[in-house]
Image 1 (cartoon, rainbow, N blue to C red):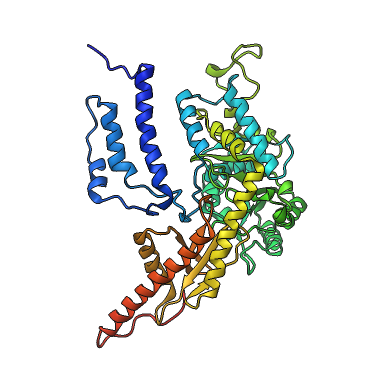
Image 2: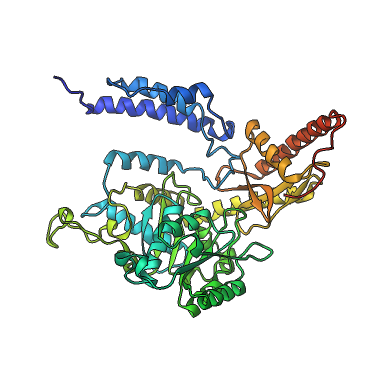
Length: 498
């Protein structure tokens, strides 16, 4: 019986890559001006979902044709010049090329003596330097911010509750408590649930008028929780909140954490790199005192998905939590294969892709000076959107941002603002000129976006505001006309609330 051989001669492999490169390059060419979002038709989605398991091999050219027609034709739109929804950054082209090479190499970067490990160690050092840490810091690359925060908080749990890795929390007399602001990313809640601390152990600290964690409220909560029999062990500050892009008062939080003997973690998945901007140095004061920092190169470092990083001041804290070398991986120190560091000892993954190559490549391609220019441009575009929104009578700015986020609402006539803006957001997505998202700030639904896009310009800021106003006014007219036609019914809305 003849078995199919996946191996290709070099010339056929080149033909395969050339075809894939043609598809990618065509997408790249249309990306800046394409629709910001294209929902796949139901026939395409159902065609994929209903497809049977292939029994026979298919030619690669047919597979790539299918990818072109059914996948590339309906992109999410990340990289379009006005894609500002969520915090999805435009990927650098050098990172895309490096990802192809890393995938071809197919290294498992758990350990052994291989260049990939040294590249990752260098990337961790560079990331630490960006946030103002010494070269002696350690860390590990992971999939993204959720995992980066989970890994850091697992290290914090073991450091502040020694033996929890071995015995679990059932042997601990008092329930643990972790403190984060009410604006913290949802992955912090997920982390405490996964770590056995439980949602009850996540203590949400009130924020001030600018939505920053209140250090006085934090200190009062710690005292009250200790009195109630809880054991505080960690404070989580945020450097760039997902809703509004504000930075918590890190220096004051560091003071509280140190005075109380708690681990101080900073979730900087989005905003930590901006610590390298001299004009924002005061804002980030205190990040250099953190025990751990989460940062996502796939956000504001413009690296392709996926790549997050957990940085720790003391590399031994990760090993204390994660180090495990089963017999089948054990090597003598003098072994030709043995490496200086096993990265699998620093996090939960044994099988690890070569994430570091694309980060290493992009950081060289851009350089710190280049990054500073890109970050300043993103911040400028976001602030221009806010300025234009504040100046328009039909718009209301919802929140301040330290970084490159913006948040505003359209003000309808005699309609409930929150419901109206939810409908308006759907119109924006259907329109396709811009892509923004929505959130709730202070109990009120609002439109928001985050500029992490090296293609965005001040002209795009104007297009954003003009588009929202145009679509908002059209929707407002439709809804007023609909209400006017509902004879004998109570007018809809009329209250400006959430």
